[in-house]
Length: 240
Length: 240
DNA sequence: CAGTAAAAATTGGTAGTACCAATTTGAAAT
DNA sequence: ATTTCAAATTGGTACTACCAATTTTTACTG
Image 1 (tube, rainbow over the protein chains, first blue to last red):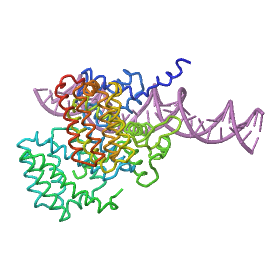
Image 2 (image 1 turned 45 degrees about the horizontal axis):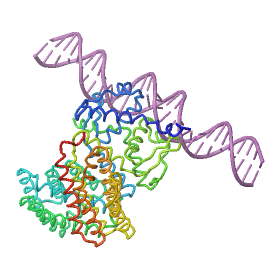
Image 3 (image 1 turned 90 degrees about the vertical axis):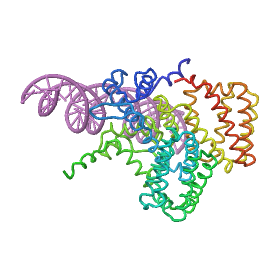
Image 4 (image 1 turned 60 degrees about the vertical axis):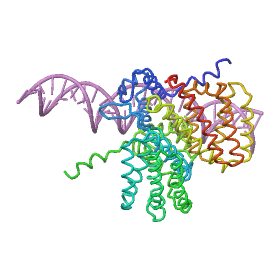
């Protein structure tokens, strides 16, 4: 009766061996970002599992963004996790586990933190780029509006020097593109909200120039205040 | 020369068909959380691809948390995305794309937002639970300290009513468990930081009771102020 | 008829082989 | 030394077979 419980545990799905192997090699320093993995046929030999199982793991890591598969060339360790986040989030969204309100709440928190961190880390060059974008935003077509808006937020995210936050913000932006296009377009183009957003963007820029975190706070609140307001008005019109 | 560029695009990897199919069925209402997917052999017939390719997609969705595979039973749509986040984050961490500082910055932003949202959404029951945890935290063993600390933060996250933020926070907690155990233990057990954390936890609780967002802000700043301080002291000692 | 136990069918898990498609490598030709 | 082209490498897909866990059906027993 002693080892009855243990028997259950021994089983480990094959593909986990691949993931564990890769993690181990990374820790050991044998693999690093950019490294080429052993060929699939080779891996299946090394780990004593079928190429089938190896591929299931590889494919997963591929979609997760850990590796990049190139037919004929090989599998390479990369580190582009954005796709994965987007895929996950869009599934959560489709399954009605999250809604736009939750996404907006998350985004607000991250934009706030990104801006705060950017105040400490932004370069002179980035400030100039930002100034340019904000200026352009004042007189541009509806089409360019969205592009410039993304650029503005992306620049700030980058200036935060926090890749994790930047990636998540980027994923949220992609998600919004996929599912909430109309809302984004409306918010960015309706005359009244456009003015307020302009003020908010201006405030964000100024907070960076003056290194003023209180100003940053106000600007973000103004920015998402108008978004949330529009959101409530359009609660039913969001496409699923 | 006209259709040269287009030829490149036509190819679509097989497994994407599966993911697209599932998304479509969800949109159409034929699949929902808890639904059983068609059997793998059946799917491969429906989509006109090999079971191999189907499985690669299924395995990916499995690890991503979209579905849950049960040998002999079938594949079921679930929606447990935490594992995926943990796996992604731990890979990013291993590949040195992110460090503890970035994780802490992200966590601070999310804890802040969670607490703010919780102020609006927390139930009386959750407040009582929280009060209990905070009280227990005052006189407990080092071992229980970590468990109670997690429980406190988890309760607040849950009270925020934002599943997305809750999931990410949980993933961050798991990540810290995996890679930064020692630091967590030290922060939670060293006498001086313990007192400050206690004050911070108290402040978080009080901010919820009094629905006071300024108090919440202060408490979070105190909480992560001491963590960041400890972090700087231990910058080199973090295990990789 | 109800309940139970055994057999059969279903379904995911793994393995192996074969061949295609893209890329890389290397040898041969200039 | 460069170019060209054939061969080898490597990921992409398909098919088959069998194992293992689960579910469903069948048969039996009381």
